[in-house]
Length: 480
Image 1 (cartoon, rainbow, N blue to C red):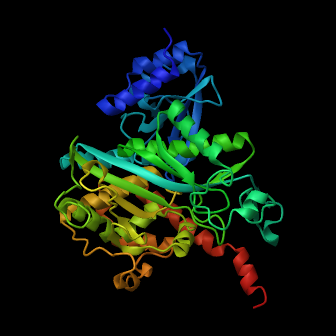
Image 2 (image 1 turned 90 degrees about the vertical axis):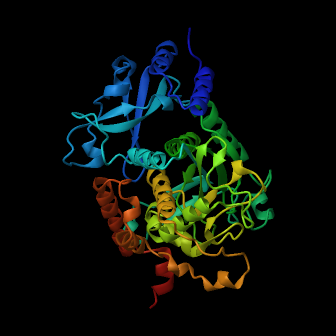
Image 3 (image 1 turned 120 degrees about the horizontal axis):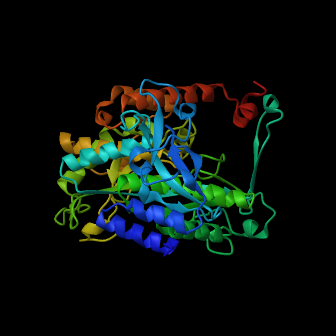
């Protein structure tokens, strides 16, 4: 009897709760009985960019979920190294039917070394598994990661490719921008946050994205709203999952959204600072650690400030201690630092200061379920597998070293003004230097083979950004 997609989704939810994996037999049965002809094997490079190769259903059997499949020349993505030939090993938990290609399903895949069947060390998806192992070693039974993030949807984005040497530019079209001829944009004011319909013209797009994520891919959106930026910025809250599944969820958001907007000839971007003078796109990474289903390590009912336990304070201390180095993974491109310049953070923690790079929200008292530590120094250009692993590794190092975070920084207090955001890196190169001076917290989490290549790519990004001529520079210095 065919296994419907809704049944597959319900099974996935049950598997998440129980901790069991989706049986390979169920995957094979779904493929065999639902007219599935093509299987997309998806994987991620060092920057977190999704790649895929497609194989026929005739090439799929139960063995590939343990032995893997040689389906692509992965040297084209990762380059040559000493580990030898690589293969893809599909993850049965990630089965999803593509709504825009009903004869196809996707399976996220781990990159493996063919001869040894060990994890390929440049596979960023493997990195988050390593930090989960480290958490288990100190008694953490369950780590939860959630994400609040922003992005833009434009009606069109046109890039001038024909005369780049004469001064390149990108024309963005947004029905909600102040330069639009849409009367709704002209009358809604200058702030975008929490706009309601009809001024929130992209509510249907967010709803379709959220429902597709849940109904086809099994990932839940807890809430969505219009972003702070007037010109089509969107904001979403992803449900909390284990670190690896949370990274899968965020990667799937990008994959699904890009396909949905492409179908209607629109454009979307997760670029941190997409338009000068408009709001940048932020990302908050929330974490909690659990030793049992009812034992949130971060919660202490007797703490008078934020009901944060001493262990939670040490976790915060680790994030602050390593914040400068963390930015290489949570603000990973040159453009990230323009967003940080427009919306600076202070090196401190608070329960209500939006400028603090670490927040410990307290929306409800005496609620251990809701106690979280939130790292706000991130943006949606991240590779989530590296960023989530790095945040958890920094916090875990704080617990091991018993790092005291100091006094919290309250909104409006003098100490907020005294703390300079310049204590944090202001360029990608400064983040690279910061990690060079503070690498120990990620030792054993990010393999050197991956880290060395990652840093080389970031150095190249920085050098290329130094040579680029911006519209601002032309306007500022043309008559110098």
